[in-house]
Image 1 (spheres, rainbow, N blue to C red):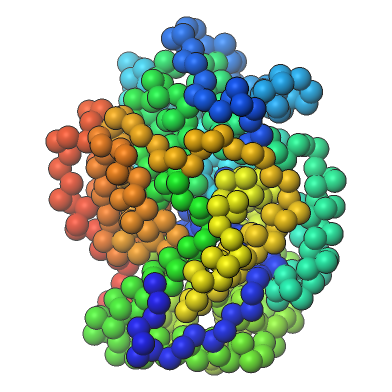
Image 2 (cartoon, rainbow, N blue to C red):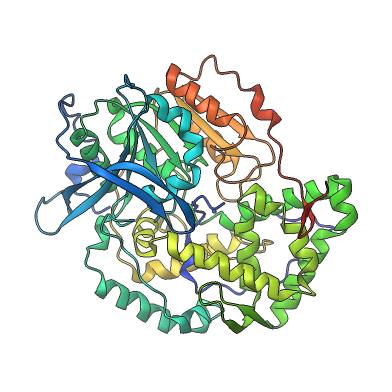
Length: 519
């Protein structure tokens, strides 16, 4: 979405950012921000296997933990060994990390909920912990199954550390040769064939897990990229899916990355409009779009030297705060209602306190680096997204946006080096299904806006789309939505759900200072 003509023009954006953490066209992962080497024989839906019998996968007591989350969660864990190349059934084998949270009931429903994480590159056994409370009632009657998708978590993770010298470069254009060398080194050091770590192959894994655990039918919950995974599984194994909940929807036919800048700009414009309509916000932070553009212009002219405390070492660190860094903060702080509440204050105080923004940047990117397996994400996106848009389209789509081609152009650069699998001829076709599906969106989602769920719904006639007012990315935990999700799963239909309560969800009030919002 372009800014209104009355607003000052955005400062020009250098073409590509060097940091791989920017190249997730979300988280599209939940923050709070959104991926097949198959032979012709594998291009059609696999034959439906016979109904499952007794489980064959042994499980043992375990505790789940995740970086940045103090609590742990008791579960039953196991490993399922699969071939890295499911077509040849030869060569390297990998272990899939699986956790089952048993239902509380002594007489549980036979169909569990499989949780599909975002990213691409997040691990289900880690990301579930951030939203576990939303599944408390669901878990009363149903097992929750967490499978770290191949290439993530403890399922043969694919991850490459970016050299510090590349992280200090402002754009890929500054050191494209070094970045290409990094990618080539990364590929040479991976104990993996990266063409085998994409969505359709991973969903074949998921069905093997289902069968090994003895489930006949399952329910799917996918968030962000996980919704693409869920739709892929639904397409491949339609009779195995009882219901699905898609939270922050990624339609199959969409090439994610191309519209990231447009969607992020639209979300920020909505946040600015909400502030302008709020007397307290507009009184404390007048002319917010103008202030925002002034910061972009200042940082485009020259980075600002700052001294900050390193969030890992605790030591003082000298760094230059750049326009790219500011854009990253704006993008990812647009994901969550709690961080959105801080945006007007951060923008208002930025020009006198760039060090605070730099600290937020370090904290944010440290969190992203620990939660994502970047090499797995490259394998997905280079197979399923970048082949479906051009550099010219990326340039056009990024016009009049604060992100510019930071994501779309950066992905295209990475995928020049990263190996790409061919995908089935029908992979990007809209998924068609009569399975009951609950679609969830946040009104202000900066990466999977409600229009994406509307697009998916066109071929999902038994679906219902709920939009949480004033909310961002990942809404399963908000207001009455956990109750509605539990009711939906219990009934197995979208019919009869009392959804008026969703309209009562309100965004978190804007902070007027760093102590919090107005009492």
